Length: 302
Image 1 (cartoon, rainbow, N blue to C red):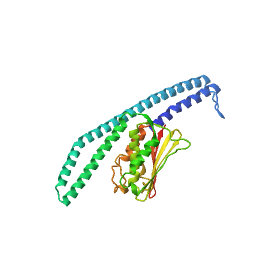
Image 2: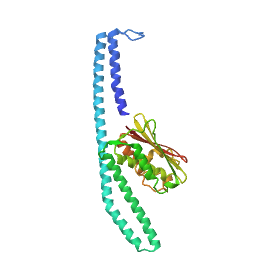
Image 3: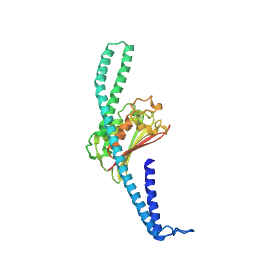
């Protein structure tokens, strides 16, 4: 708002200067009903030039100020990202050894416990494992955002086929229909420059999400097409769907919808997918209808 006001203030003198300069040449106003002889043409022309010069100076100052503001904003954004990556790295480092020790301890206790104690220990072990995965995923996101990408031509068709084959072996996948639709005619998908491992990770996360949130007997479809210089990959499901007011939040780290708390997860799958896609110069979107399903769409430039 302040920047808009600044530009308006700068432009108004420029307009005023132009009007005064015009007065200096014509000596009258359009539809004039009074005498403007008291306003000498030379004086109006000089005043118009002066006001115009002031306006140009104000415009230059505003431009320099906006550039400085933009640089400060970029610097602060970069500093915040660096601080966040450092925090995640330290968190992973500080939690890794304690979690490993806790897993070993619970395994030893469970081996010599009665059934009730063994069940309690297994619950603790599951939560410890969940924390381990959580810290690992947080570190992955931080690494993806900062690591240098190994950009090589990636055959997305082969990559997607491989990830679908892997997904068919996931728990519960046999109870859901998993379909794949890739173009073959008149030509296949073009290669995408990028990191094959990271792109595999993104597709695998989408498939895992779709299968987790689709009930038995449901359907998951994976589609890909070339469009406007990009390859668009869609992973669609007939799951529970996401409420419209929650849809923008699914890209936030560790956000989990209240309706999805019963499904195991960390809330980092979609943020990780977004980090991978954006590092490749693409973008990711999602459409969803509650009770009908969700479509997550990746667009990667070729």
